[in-house]
Structures are given as C-alpha cells and as structure tokens.
Length: 304
Image 1: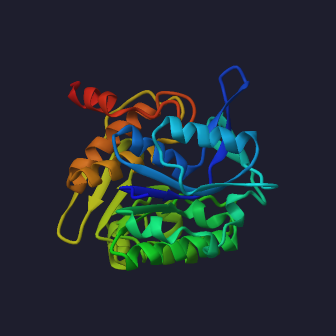
Image 2: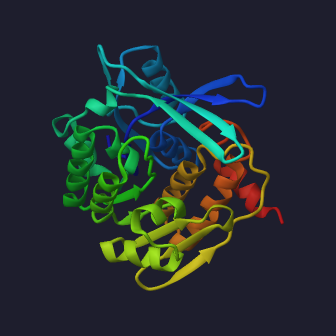
C-alpha cells in the first residue's frame, strides 16, 4: 500500500447530544475524522490503527471503505474493544465524556507498526490524542514518526489537547517532543496557550517554528488561521457562519489542509480552503456527517 496521507490514532464511536436531549450515534476520533476529510477532498488516504473485533470495530472498517480510506493497515483485534465517547452541548460549548480505557488502539506498540506502509507515505498525520491514550500509544507514535522521517516523508501533528486524558505537564512534554519531529504543525489557539504559556498568536507561531516545523497553521476559531513559515506569515480569514456543532471542525480543517498541500497548494491557499471546509462542517451535527466534499467547498468559496 502506498498512500499520500497515512493517519494514525484511535477511532472512537460517538454519541452526540441533539437539541431534544437524545444522542445521535456516529463515528469519531480526531485522526479518523481527518482521514475522511482528506479523502472527501480527493486525497489518497490510509488509516493505521487497531479496533475491536466487534460490531463497533466493523462499523469503522465499513465506514472507511465506503469513504475510500485504505484499511490495509487496520487490524481487528479479537478480545479488543472499540472506544466510545459522548458529546454534550451547553452554554460553554461542547463537552466530551470518554469511555476508552484499554481500547484496542491504546494497546498498540511499536512492534505493531507496518514499516513498509509508513516508509511509502508522503505524510503521516498524528495528534496529541494519538499519544495521550496510553504510554505504549505514545511510544508507537514516536516510532512511526521516526520511520517516516527516515524514509524521507513528512509528519503532520495536531496538538489536540485533551486534559481529561492526561495531566498538563505530561501533555506538554510529549506534545512538544512530537511537534519537534513535525514538518507541519497544526495547533489550535486554546491548546497552544495552555501548552506554551503564550497568548500572542505570532509568538505561538514562532515557538512552533523554533521547534523545527516548516509550516505552522495556528487555527484561531472564527478569526481564521495564522499560517507561518520561516520565510513569511499571513492571517487567513474565516467566514462567519451559524455554528451548530464544532465537534469535528479542527479535524476537518486538518484533512482539507493536508489534502490541498498534497495537491500542490502553498500553505496559505491550503488554509483558505481548509477554513471553508471547517466552516461548512460546523453547520451540522456530528464529527463525520457534516464533513464536506470538494465540490461543496469549492461552491462555498465561490459564493460571496
């Protein structure tokens, strides 16, 4: 298997609260969402994980295959389980409650990595969540990044800080180490403020450039994205929309951004496209269902 983008992490079944209080079942997991978002933009994408050999695990495999995401590097583990999370919505935004301890993905080790697939990927995408779910998962992500970098590929890293999964000091140490191995840094402003202690977006961009990234795309919510390279930087504005559910917005941004980088766009053009994709995604419920396809994004961009 040779793919443009290989995403590594934990898929997790989603139950998303609706206005009437009922929960809508769906599929989530940040790097899984990213993979689907990139595939919907036309990129050749694969997913690397372990799932339970159960109905939930099979539903993910069915989903990825329906979306055109290569599942060659997905393993269904007998006796394993697939994680679950609930999303509730309130005045302060959305809140996550996880039930994922001991999941099949959290038990992955470096010995489980498919070296050939990693060596042929153009970009490996991982996140803070990919490393937060267990010590062995953190080690597995580091090992995967080393394989990709040694083979001449690039690494994309989204901080995606979840303090319910690990304490801030450990998160800071692991995520900074991961970002130091990344070519493309994809932090969110709120995460970056907590991780770096900085509040100015330009200083945050400088911090991640200083760790070694060639591209930093710092998402600023409704204000768009600050894109920085060692040579130049620019704020790429977003477009105001009515937000219904921001659950998968950052993942949609990541997938769309990486798909356009792979297609040959410069990072500023890619960010404008990814901002549009995320703006569409937040207008629907769930992590996967609202992720737009390329035609939808192009039509949105063409609308004044």
